[in-house]
Length: 75
Image (cartoon, rainbow, N blue to C red):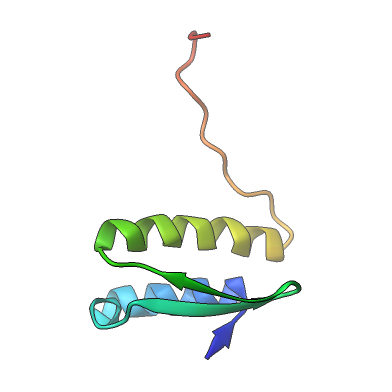
């Protein structure tokens, strides 16, 4: 099933809560450019993909995605 990024974020959160992410290896996203498959092999990969999806979902909702700052005082 294809999702928007907002729907995918919600689905990934539900899969994390239920443990279903362990048996899945990919999700499909539909956006204005067509469809895209987001794949993962480990929980670390899943977390990275979840961060990506959260940023894209924020843009879809019209919010600026959070961008962390570097260390203060370093150049």
